Length: 588
Image (cartoon, rainbow, N blue to C red; front, side, top):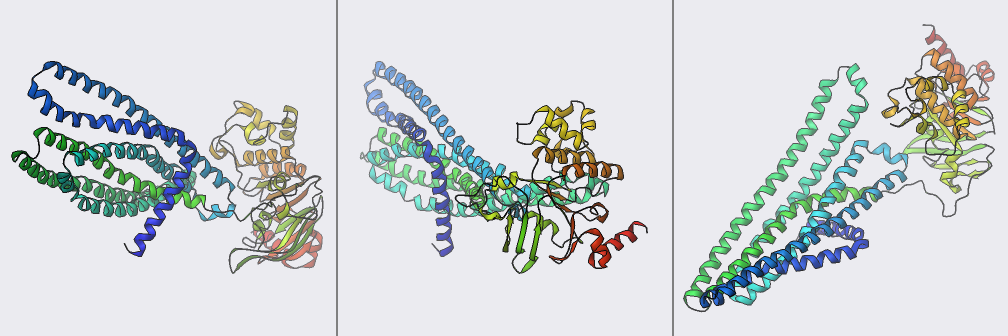
């Protein structure tokens, strides 16, 4: 065994022990299933031994009552075997389903706990494929494979003991072919593992392509990109098809090869056994019992070798699942976090720098105090770090250097829940869910009364269009709110923020890409929303931030100007250049 094979074996053993850890809480059901497997194995083997007595004792005596008793006994044995086999199958499936339920729940819970940075590096389709496809492969291993593994293993031992008891010479002869049998099984296992891993990667690509296509269907059709998407899907689909064919080829080859080896072994054993009967060293009944025991052994061996295919696919899936579970969140809460209460809303950036990738600074030495109740506007061309800067406030990321405080408390000592409870966000891309309007605007809270909801809807100018909906607040708005216009979606987002009533508010391009009428309504709603709150507004259109308390102009991750609109306009610096450029473009 070379170094890579040893490492592969260690990795497989590590994965196996982790899966066993999930099984341990259900050990009682597992033990009952194993006991049922033992009984099933014993009773499944009994007819082979009874052949010896049929041919050596019952047939020579010619007594029919013995024959009738023999037949009744056979029926009784299979009744007991059928019951224990049912119990074994049900108990093993139950353990498997429990384990997969726990794993799937843990994976989803863990994904929810990871930082936004993790999702920026992984495709959503890949994660969906992992939760559905990879965990389902583990389900196959834990429920079906584990059940068959236990059942067939215990079905193998009684006939194995019997063949040694009947004739140890023939038994050793039968075992000579075992190393020859094991070699292709090991080789097939290695090949199947590699093919299964590649197959799951191609499945992730397929899922990602479908997810992107369904999400961006409007753009695809607008740009006549159906053929492009069709070809792209076809490439990934064909690659997945090729990997499945490779796995099928390996799996299909394993069965006839093993049968050929088994047939050669059986021919040799039969020849030697018949020779022993002719020379009188073995009775006919013992030879028949020996051959019947070998035949009974063949089925478990065949099933176990076939299970290898499922085991290798499951291990490939488990590797990907556990790689997600092993991912850590760099945004960690202190063991005894401080609860953020009675917030006045003062936010301070003290020497804050940030990098997504090492050596590529996005923010550089930001020093800024935002006073309680103040409205600060962040302006600048795209890519200067505005959205990154506000993403640090709810701790979606932590600064690479420096610190951010709210009311003098470092964000890293605060409870994440209490921090985010005190911050409201309205973004350019409104996030809505395939649910009712009511559930979208209350989102996770049930402590609002009808008066509060109506007040928030009126303040956000969403009340009128909600009343026009078929079922009012109970209208389901479709995935991502596709049944609503852009302005309606944005007003629902503002309604949600008003209901939350946070002391700190972040508006990230909340009025961009809207028509004049929608923008006017939303601007009125925003004026209501920002009243008496510490507000940070990101805007490209400078006309929307003229009334801000202060405006911070950003360039290359730094604040290069800070002041009111009048101060910055009269300074004829970076802000004036941005303003004049937008003014010229709007009149060109």
